[in-house]
Image (cartoon, rainbow, N blue to C red; front, top):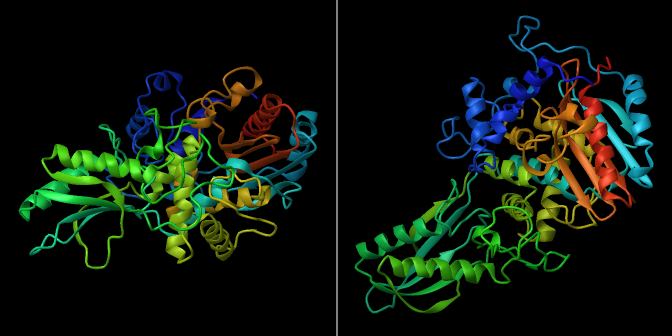
Length: 488
């Protein structure tokens, strides 16, 4: 499984992410799409559009959609049939893949149940099947389904607004400002916005609008009524997910972190409103009393608004960091676009319905949330690979951020500290995959460029394993083997 120079080039340029260790060591903070700044700059410097930042001011010129198909799907630089697209070798065969993968899938570390599927992305044909239709608990690989559903239902360009509106303020009616949440999961009260919508900026614009109306004193309320149903996930209070509300700043994190587990606020809406009221006061607006829940009402006049990055950028950040808060927000944006209840149940129903309309193999699938934290979720390896292949289809550019958002082995997100030594070092930079882990559940689903230059989508699912570290290692072996395979 010697890593060949052309493979490194294919993996890096084909999807626009760096596979050079020196550049990664210099990588800076996450930008608005969840991608490291140094990686973005490197990719831009190669003259390719893959993996470009989808946020404002990114090298893609502010376009919300991910790169077009050829730079993403092309693995080599040889002409094919005069089309100008890259040519790859022949696709792998089932028997060859079986000889490679079957022994690894038989490893006892994978627990009592293991399933797998491999699809040639260029043709969309499944080339390996080991129980691919059996639905298992997918854990965080559920986010692949959430991403495809949100992008196709709401649109890659869709942005989520947070508004400040005014009621009263005319004649003798007292002026009241109401902060209206739209469900933006990246809204921030911090100084460094990294491309996210800023509560501070919204307060500045709101104060300016109030002064233009000669209003210097207001009462204040907040409206988070867009979402319905329970706010707490069925798992209960958890450091992996804040209470899900339509108005939250910094994901309700109490430690200023931007990813991973953290202590969360029990009242994200109230905390965001309190922060906004404080910013208004800093702008010279007198605020009477404490923020209180309110309804904006039809007669409310908009004072100012801020918008999230486009959904394509939110999808990238969600997948790279396995961000549960963004996942649940995207499920609700899917429900909104589909005109279903904006709740855990409504979001789950909207995801399933959208995937069915896309013609994906949803038989046996069951959705309970958008993040995969619910053990009641059920997906198959066949569905996971179909989602990835759909995201790579030339006629689906709006889904491309599902591919560009996948963590890169040894470099980014949830794969940053994997594939760094031993036999799996050969998969570094070539394996791009979404992880999924719950107690007794381990999944890995993503893409590789194999030794013949084919872009392959894969999914490996397990249940009943008792050693998470050993299971994870075997899953990494499987993906590395696939990346090094010349199985035509």
